[in-house]
Image (cartoon, rainbow, N blue to C red; front, side, top):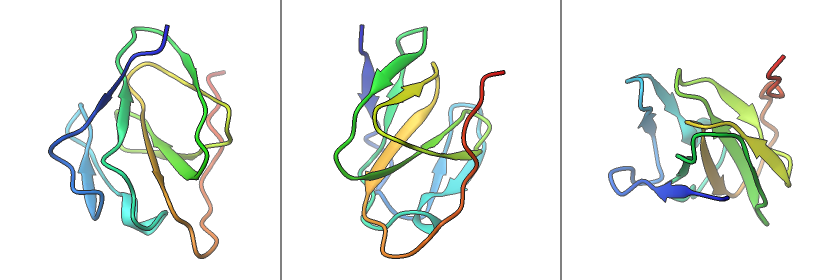
Length: 94
């Protein structure tokens, strides 16, 4: 099952506020980001994106996104353009 919700209150630039109230500046990692999609399925799902993307956990930590990517419940995926190198950790559920 794939259930992602699109954030209507995020412009795609600057700080994104997570469900836990933490913030991350998405623009530090990708340009022209979409509004973000959050996994609300209650479990981990596999997501495929065709453009550059990052994922953010509910605590505001950013992670690399390698399509196809397992996205845990509560994580938000942002898709956009990357014109430079950014370094984010790889998510590990272990």
